Image 1: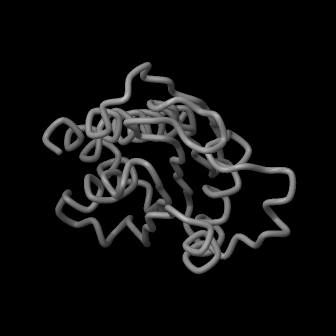
Image 2: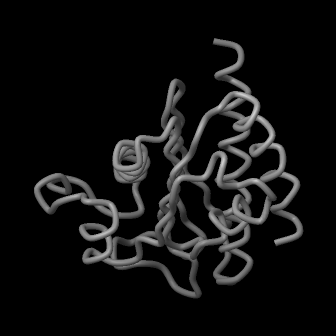
Length: 164
């Protein structure tokens, strides 16, 4: 958590200064993204909600993504990460949606992705979607790496939004 806090503090400072908000959905990071953002004092000014979307049932109940919306998509993919971020943003009426979906390990997922694979999306006035591959199956290390990359990406997108 200590390595995630500087990123979360930077994000919090920017969001508070702009009067903007975020909603987070994550799976293989297990709540670390939300925990880091909530660890910053004053989080209620910018953090609207978060969900660990680990199953199909959770996807429907927590984010409201239907099976029909998933037609042609699969979890742990960039298109799904984008849908997840957009859905969280819309569902919470947030300025930004941030999502992460992957396979922490020690083995891969049922879709053929290796352990250490995750897709991250940020959506708002700027949108970015990317894939991270750590190349190893250390579950805890991957969870930390996924959370760090999600926060780094969000910070980069906030900086890019400043330039637009």
